[in-house]
Amino acid sequence: MDPTLAARALSAATEITSTALSGDDPEAVLETVVARAVELADADLGLAMVSADDGRVVVEAAYGVDGLLAEAPAGDVEGGPVGELRGLTLETDSAAGQVARGSEPIAAEDFIVDPRTAPYVPDELRGYGPFAAAPFGSGGRVLGALTVYRRQGREPFSAGTVEMLAAFAAQAGVVLALAEGANARHRVTLYQERERIARELHDVIVQRLYGTGMQLDRVRRNMRKRFAQADGARLSDAIDQLDQTIEEIRGTVRALRSPEPRHDPGTPTDLAESARGEVRIAGELLGYPPTLELSGEFADIPAERADHIRAALREALSNVVRHSGASETRVTLTRDAEGVKLRVRDNGSGVPQGVATRGLRHLAERADAAGGRFFLNSSPSLGTLVAFDLPLG
Image 1 (tube, rainbow, N blue to C red):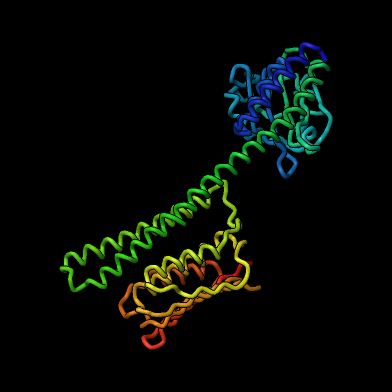
Image 2: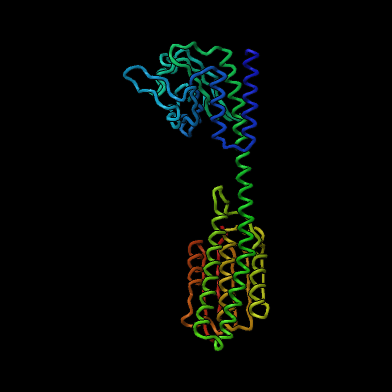
């Protein structure tokens, strides 16, 4: 290979590596690879084709020196913007398809008439003649083909240029792998930040609002006779608004935890610690500490499952605080081979007739959607039992 050409190829590879490691999108890096290949090969058009599952190759990036396709011969398709080539598919037996399967680089003086390539030339490329293609990939895995073209009538690509293209394509495959890795690391960092915000919203803000709402509700019930009717209604509205705000924040938390990036719903969370926090808040509002019994390992419960259990516990304790008048409350959380079982029992007067049960209906819907089971037993003489079972498999 000509030393000057080799030096230019090395410079281009260095530039692309820097771009890749800066965290740019792999697609943008691929476009830079094609542009540099066109410049190094003194070509008029360059394409990066990625292998599809069926063996065909699809154009993912294209670059032309003037931004337009070469003019096609009379009677054929007219030239158009190079960008229109993105998404173009070539058959598995085409030269690019063969190269993308791990073949050696290939070159043709005129791919319109060369028997190896002529049957597979798409109309969009019929204004070109000299052609060269080299495989690119990473870690021994060929990802696709890097191809360059010159217009009809220009000189064919020299052996040295084809050799340079092959070396550059090999480097480009490594660079693309680096770019994908940098992009993945960026997504992980973004997810971690979203998860931190979601955790603070859920574990701090929601709990504070929840506690405030419970305190206001106790004030409203204990001082009902001292309030004018209008004041009591305003206090009730304030409590309803707090409930609505809590629900909206929970929705935000769910959105933060289910991005693309996606968030893996299997990420574990410590459900036992969450249960202790919920019981502690309820104890402050009840004036006595509910009993909490934990059985099993809860540190690796998937976040999505833990959210369901946590919501059920909070709703059950909320009903105890608001309606039961209980002097004893017992929370049992068990994990066994079948899943997680939650029981909340109190010795109060049960859920009063006419009280809104929207929260309980939501728990029933949660359990049904998650393949679990919700059960409520409430009476003035026996108190209330809330049961929420959820499989982990």
